[in-house]
Length: 203
Image 1 (spheres, rainbow, N blue to C red):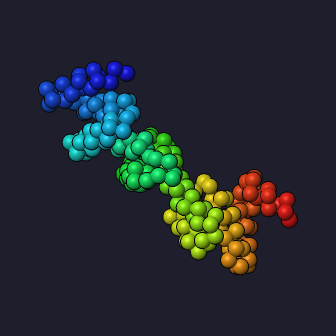
Image 2 (cartoon, rainbow, N blue to C red):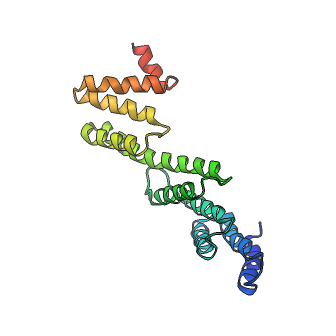
Image 3 (cartoon, rainbow, N blue to C red):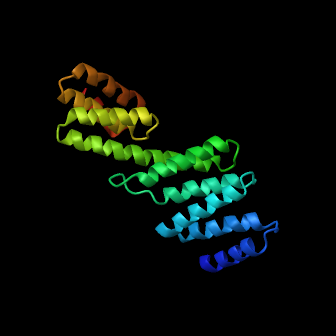
């Protein structure tokens, strides 16, 4: 974990021994030392190193590892749902690229988990904007946000909240008939949700 010292040795190998069989791993090692430091600046530098690796060694057997680390470095820059989601979008883009390019990689399961986490963060951000609108009875705007979440991310893990808020907005707008299917989806898909239990107790 002496990241700077390790990086200097890796860089010496990369720059001084262009024919070395260890050059690819050393280039990855440089990126890994930046990931290990895990600061805003070091994660940006890590992304640059792994991108360079993919440029210099595009058919390397470890290309999947480099692409995975790019996605990981972006996920470490993600902000809370209430803040700017640029890094989240970047993470999703890079993780999706991994899943497209390396379907047989042993890292696929871990990348899929990171991709789901990233998508949940982005969808949660959109949901919270909709919930804010709903709180102040700006229901048409809230409904647009909720629909957008369900269209762009149908596997969002917090769909129960979206269904409930959608139904509540429909009721506020006087569209009770349109609200019922959303309540039904909530009960069917999320039987153990606290919102479902609340509806069950009311019925």
